[in-house]
Each structure stands twice: as structure tokens, then as C-alpha cells.
Image (cartoon, rainbow, N blue to C red; front, side, top):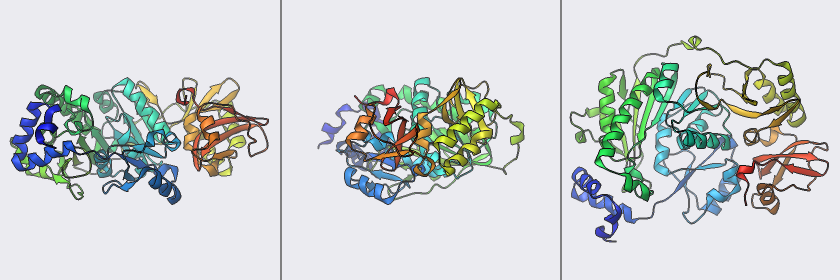
Amino acid sequence: MAVTDIDMGLPLAFLEKMRALLGEREYADFLESYGRERTPGLRLNPLKAIDEATILKLTEQLGLEKIPWALEGYYYDSQSAPGKHVWHEAGVYYIQEPSAMAAAELLAAEPGDKVLDLCGAPGGKTTQIAARLKGRGLLVANEIHPARAKILSQNVERMGISNAVVTNEEAETLARRFPSFFDKVMVDAPCSGEGMFRKDQEARGHWSPENVAMCARRQAGILDWAGAMVRPGGRLVYSTCTFSPEENEGSISGFLRRDPRFFLEEARVFEGFEGGRPQWVNGGQEELARAVRLWPHRVNGEGHFVAVLRKDGQAEHKDRRFKKPAYVRDRQVTDLWQGFCRQTLTKEGQQFGAWAQERLVFFGDQLYRIPDEMPDYGGLRILRPGLHLGTWKKNRFEPSHGLALHLKKEQVRRWVTWEAQSSQMEAYLRGETLNVPCPGGENGWAVMAAGDYSVGWAKQVGQVLKNHYPKGLRRG
């Protein structure tokens, strides 16, 4: 395809800028990438204990091929439809652009870390970080826009994450509440989105030099507040999905001048990754070359920029400054929760219930298990203060959809399994009542599963399973 055929939909000022930055030879390669079909990606969710049989089945159905820089990342056949598979609803995988997976991998969260994803929606990097934490430590996932924060919360639930708190706050508000608190902070900054032009036609129409400059100014404030929340010795990862030097090397260069406690670490690179380009920024420090650029003409993915920064100093033990949340002390509530655990969960599952007993919190009439490391969240706009256990309804407890998605087969006494593409599973996803005897012999709650992966609740009454799949998720 001729270049003149490819560049028709791209802003002229953007093309002129990229030609000046890249030079004629690389610019031609860059522009040619817009004529190629992009390759979409997904990440398998290790919190679901995915086995080799599942990976093999998905490989056959979706044409999976490994993404080199993401531990659980795979390209999939663009003609397949993984978003329509029941395992998507079960949180077995998350559909995510391949290049976007690099940032959370470079953050390198470890079990037990306290981590903040400051600009978390829709949830790709949040859920990727949660996979690395393995249910231990604390993950605060924040999104400033309420509608996007709701989507973030839904994805946290779908992936079965137990140690995440979802907030809807300004960066400044969080920084004043959590000074030097987090071991690791992810800033996937709002940007001009140039790296998504091949994927998102609408983004091209919003682009302008003025918008690039506005994004760079906004990023400066976000970075400053994010840096204030990193503990001494902690890590800050900054990423964008744009090519703009003003928003990439420029934003990092300005931040390093404003906060000399931070320095750039050498990021791990893979084939096709390139370093940052200090020469594109006036007075740019040579260490900017330690950042990473992913180009659509160099890797099988879209455009992305990642910088890994470290804060000078040693970790300080000042967590005692933070108040603890108001845990539930009502004996009737805790007894009801424990009664549900005894009736519904196996011995292993009951240990889970007992373990949660001292960290129960009410959020309206909703019962949650809050992560160990989360301090008092009073006064913050919270969408999800931890793992949603269920609803307190006078003298009974009704388990949440999120709890079903979190539980595994060995934790549940009544586990009803169907093949993922069976007529029974399709009926369940439509919200139908099922005339199916349930294991366990007595009335009570049962988890419906597609193969080995939980999908939702049903309640056995005699020989009938009453459907409790959320109405908002039911298929037509």
C-alpha cells in the first residue's frame, strides 16, 4: 500500500512532527506500520490457577502465541472472539493491548508490596499488578473519572482480586493521605494517545499540538503527587501510549529536575525495544536513554513509553501513623458470616472465612474483607474497599458475585461444573432457573463453574437451582 493511501486519516501536523523526529528512513518504516493489521493480545490470570489443559484449549480456540515481554501475555487470532467466551466472564483472562503489558512487568510488584495504580481504568495494569501480588499485600487502584472508576471496579471483581481497594480521587487528595506510603507506584498517565492511532480512529480526531502541550502540563502535576507517595527506596513507573517527546522524555526530565530524590533505572529490554531519546528534549539528561520506547514498526504491538524510576533512601517504618479502619464488631454479623462459611465452604474454605473475620468492614449494607495493609479510608471516595463478601439482609447473608469469582473448587462444598460451551452454561448465563440436582444433598448456595473456573452463584432449593447470576451481566 502506498504511503499516500496510508496516511490519509492521520493529522498532517502529527505526520510532519514524526518525520522531523525520525528522519526519512525510519519515518517510512513507521508510516508503513499503519498499513499492517494489528495483533491483539490477552493475559491469562494466574489468580485462577490456570492449568496447562486450559492453555492448550485456549491456544486451539484463539490461536495464542506468546508475547515475549509479558509473563502471562499472548497474542490471539484477530478473527477469534475471546470477549464472548464464558471464561472471559470468569476472569480467566484479560484482553489487553500487547505493548501496554510492558509497564506493569517493569514495575515488578512482589507479594506483600503496597502498590498504587494512580490512573487505573479500565484495569489492564491494575489486574496485571494484582497477578504479581498473588493476593498478598495491598493494591490501591485509583481512577479520577467516576464512570471509568466503575469499570475499573468491575474488572477487579471479574478477575477475582481480593487485596485491591478501588478509589475515585484526585492525585493530590491521595498524596496528602498516603505520604511515602507505597513500595511501588504505577502512573499510566493520561496522554494524547498517538500510540493508539492505528487502533483507535477516534483518537486521531482529538489530536492537536495544543492537546499534546496540555497533556504534558497535566502529567507534571500527576508525577509530582505520585512521587510524594513513593516510600524511600521505592519504585515509580511512568508510562504513556504516545510518541510525543513532550509527554515522555520531557515529562520525565522535568520531574527529575523538580525532585532530585529520583533517578532512572535501566529497564529490562526485549527484542524491538528501544531506549528513550534524550536528544529530543532541550537539555535532556543522558539517563533518559534508560527509558523504553515501543514502536509499531519495531514490535508486534502499538506505541508505548515506559520509564522506571527509583527514589533515594531506605524504607522507613512509619505505618503506625496510619489509623486502622473501623472493623465490624457486631457479633450477630460475624456469626452470620461464619454460619454461611460453615454451610457453604469446605474445611479449606472455612479457614478462609475465619481468616477474614477480624478484617470485616461495612460499606452501607455490603460486607467486605479489607486488605491487611489498608489504613482508615474514611473521607475518601471508595468504590470497592476490598473483597466484596455479600449483603447483610436483616437476619440473612447473601453472597456477592465477586466472592463466587474469587473462590476455587477446593473451597466450596457445592460446585456445579459444566463445559464452557454447554447448553446448561448458556442457560445459566441467560439467568434461567435450572432443574439440576446439586452435589451436597441439602439446600444451600452453590458455585456454578465453566470447567474449573467459577462463574457465579445459584441457590439449591430441592431439585431446583435458582439463578443468582447478576442481571446486568445476563446474556440475551
